[in-house]
View 1: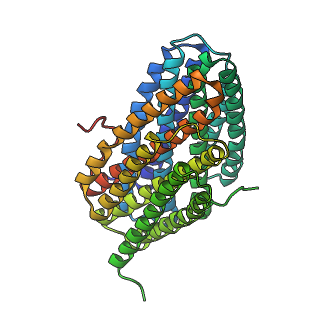
View 2: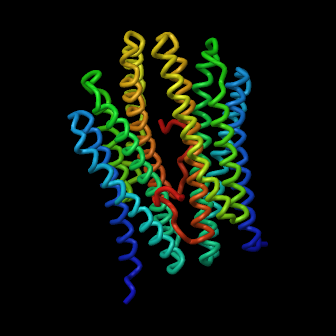
View 3: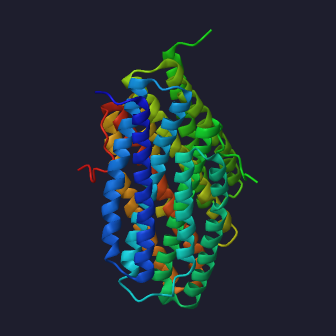
Length: 220
Length: 220
């Protein structure tokens, strides 16, 4: 027996949430590995990526089937279109967590350059943004989405701060360069996680308002 | 009078091509600015980004309207879904060109570190990949899409080469660090353009074959 349309939509919503939860956990775990210098955690991150990728394919298929067989109305179509866009960003958050994993593998093989302060702070904000973007999606909460987009500036500022600090290390002692480079790249991968959370928020606003907020400059 | 459905699909195809052409030109122009040390070209890149962003919004709206009003069949729906995914990647190629523009502004304000060889080569390949991905899309040519995905390895190899060379510069002379860092970031932005072209190819294959080739590992 065929499921009701509303149940199928709920199914998509749940899968998106599951995927987002995994992407969030990947981010948390890889930074934890880096801060606690615990390489064993990195295997978890790789295992979760496989699940994230699999979920993306399943959600895509479910959405296309819904569109083809159910001919959804404007509101439902916007929900499905938003889901299909959001999972692209979530999959790429997973890719970023894997990029950080690769840098962490290299960083954990050598003595630490410095205690990590700003990088975990950046990662915390990026994770909170991701979590908020998912909440905004499930609750159709465009105000939360707007508020979350504004937090991306904090991530960018921390990234600049990390860059300046590591540049000083490199300039004063060239032997720190490889480690400093790895940390700079980690900060850029975290920045991109913030960008993806921003993209998700924009998709939520489009879903709720039917209005495209991309490319409008500052939302002041 | 309403246009025929096939005309509307052609309209979408043309807009996607126009957008892709702009993204390609942005990439070419910014690397030209960097190699010829001609900052005047950078204004063109910024102007083109505005057009790219506008086209993304227009194409998205046209696609959603087509889905809502025309209830497309499986083949047409896959085409529309592919278009909607492809334009996300093209918009992000535009973002990468803007990121390179920012690095170019800082690099052109100081004397050159070295003649650029590998970076323009990387950019050439990334551009060719983008062009091929668009050809594959309009012609529904999945073989071209497969062949293009394989080229991404060359981009990655050049990126590693650029990184190793610049690391040597930085280690032997710390005053080169800021410029070397900028060039490393340029190479990573080019790498991401190659990644986006790869994503477009994967979407084309899905469109043609109805088969998801993402996350399958090497296509050997």
